[in-house]
Length: 198
Image (cartoon, rainbow, N blue to C red; front, side, top):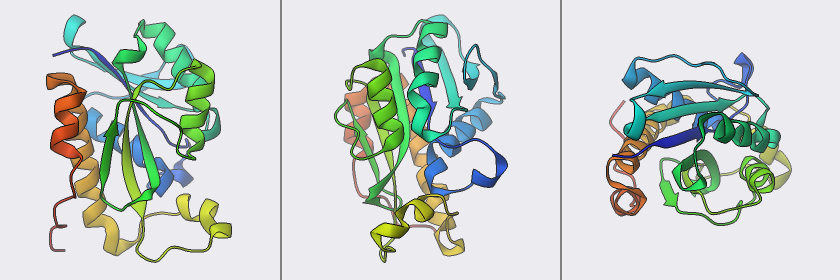
């Protein structure tokens, strides 16, 4: 077991709840549900909840900065809880991955994601773990409609796949804490199982 600072990215305010861009928030909310904790205001532009104690603590964070300024909240949370970059896990939506697919990575570029770009800029580093949650549909709207697409809610027929993805992402985060990122990558960087029948 180890300590982790788990940051789910998304946009605050009720109108963004359940939208594709808020997959990170959904995972943090699921981890809170599993642990029976609630988010509270932190000493910065984020809400947080703590699970566990000392060497096996997990601090769950949701920035309230809006996506494009997520880096400010992450830097504040790292400072408040005295975590290192090696203990940071960021959960984001990924437009390039098919819906339901997960990709765990130890670092790398922002991949065109504004939230990741903000974090990399604020921390002046890109070597931190991230879990990407696929939100791509088989038939995508035009590039001009991308912003509207990521801020739209999941379709009714997608809900079963989304629920499974959120659950598996929460499982992946817990596996990172138990066994480390490398083992979690081996278990979860695989095609998603078929969605349960509605």
